[in-house]
Length: 245
Image 1 (tube, rainbow, N blue to C red):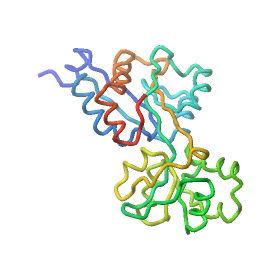
Image 2 (image 1 turned 180 degrees about the horizontal axis):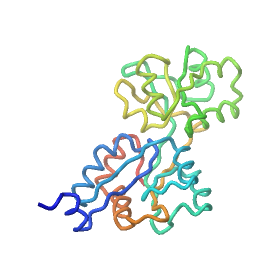
Image 3 (image 1 turned 90 degrees about the vertical axis):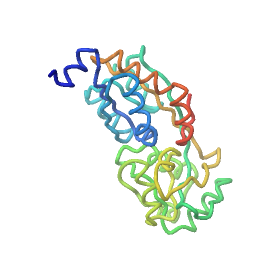
Image 4 (image 1 turned 120 degrees about the vertical axis):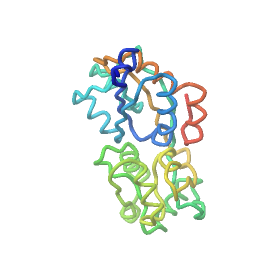
């Protein structure tokens, strides 16, 4: 009997190596099996923070497909790490406050109200910027831009890892609330979105999917990226706090 692996290769099946940030953490467990079933290909996921995605790509790591956020794309393109022919905008997320499920909603209607909520808290979870988290860096930039005093800054509890870890810390009661991207709150049991930051403080992060130069699975990789913007995928993205493109 011919081994199953050899049969797959004979009929053009491919293993697609995918490097991705945590934005799609809530959708990949559903979308990847659907894609594998309909395409016959398999997907090997590596999920890290956005900063580590960029670091790995600039360091020479060669997945077949990568997903990266908008502000990283220029550097990746200039370094020759993006095949333009396979680059597609997938979706965007916003900055939101995570609270424990059932907790009272926060007043996030203005910059002043956000500051009052932070000042009243014992601890506010954000991602540690040193771990390559976009949102951790963004929250520190907000603190500078909106003149957070030492008391406000002292409330920040730095959480290592990706955005879901911030939401998990809130769900466990290690912080009164936290700030991360919308899709990294919905995915965590015991946490929910209180609301977005006010417009003057908020930002959206757009993620692109693209082929990485040197891939030997270009057609399979293109098929996976195309699947990510299919109607079925878009419906699931929306349910997971991601606005599809």
